[in-house]
Length: 312
Image 1 (cartoon, helix red, strand yellow):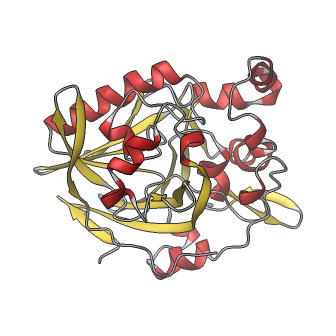
Image 2 (cartoon, helix red, strand yellow):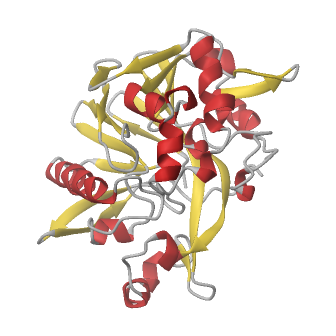
């Protein structure tokens, strides 16, 4: 199945950096029940959940969007050589991500925009690469679009990372070193654009704040011709959250706000027949949804097939 689809005048290519088991599904989605997973075994397994081990499965992936002559990356995965002492699954990776980008026709210098849907270690990693023992921007000609609230929340200069520890916010330890090696260097290089409420990229694409997973999480809305889509980042990690938008994950900084955001975006997607593209869905990778009372269900999966040549 194709790894590139076209919506209106925009093409979307999926680049998978990493795939595998993360943690027990009931830990990742703590409000879910064994019965929920088992009732939906026929389509959750094996792509999203391993019923034999109970483990949740995920991708680290980047969406390459080509619009109005520009090349745009939505999220940049975990990156190589990053020291993540509390997240060993992503520590010191050595993947062929840049080679996979090249096979998709994208050289680092070709990238015009990098969108970080939020500031977490598995979404900003390839913002930078190690060169002569220093972290430098991977994409020398790109504007890096980073929400200002997230930038300030994770900036250790502001002390907000220490507040995260004090309040027990779930993502802090897994993001150890992340700001220093993957965010600060692009800001220091003058390539970061710190946007606030919304940011219009072109006639087809815009960014809007969608808080909950992190304080400055964002969604990217695509509208071209009669087609539309929404890149939701980590607004959801598992399709069981489509079935019940009130289910949060252990990674959410503000679970109640994340649930409200998830419901609002899914309602919009259902009403506009829009493709929903999360950051971590394996298998088909994205789906159209429809309402079922106060909840939702999968209407149709996207045309992205299983990635046979994932890096790693």
